[in-house]
Image (cartoon, rainbow, N blue to C red):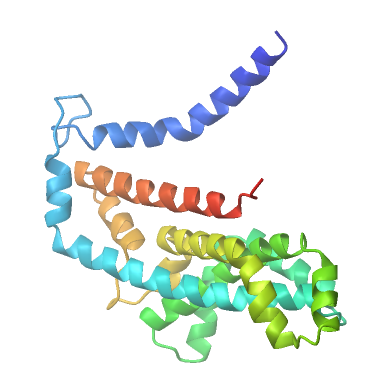
Length: 255
């Protein structure tokens, strides 16, 4: 009987989180264009969505940006995590703590700070500024993901490799990377998801010549929520959910 209040509380919390998403997905199949009443099942808005060239261009821009930013963030973040774990130097704990500050920092603060930086160095706003911004806010998440994996390693593995004459390069390529691949994959998927969903930071650093999907959706919503937007958000949510599930499966330890 004591489990019933706990289960009810958890169910209400999750219902509060996911009920709006469920309603959005349901209304993406509503045949009515402006009415909130249910007028029948229809795939019309998905047909119009896939026929919208501007949306497809924005989606392609987001996919290209997300793949490149996630790849760069994975490389830099994994090297940073390995360095924090393998080497002892002054300020090591401080640097690791600064990673969490970047994660907890509000997006609007990072967006404005990056905009000021790009203005000072006279960097034109567009693909390059978006790539640098997305890579910047993705790196801390990769560092935390990879570091949480690498601290579970047995240090005797590296000591045994050194006793057998292995250099740092051999240890990195033959031991560390094979053991880290689930965390690397999870970090990449998480970075790609964050890049694909970001609005606030992208709003400050995006230029007029390179439009990405989140900002396209934001501009469309300002004119009113259309069923086509519901369909687009449903597809985006499904893609995000798939990437998160892949990330969790990659991090899962084998029995």
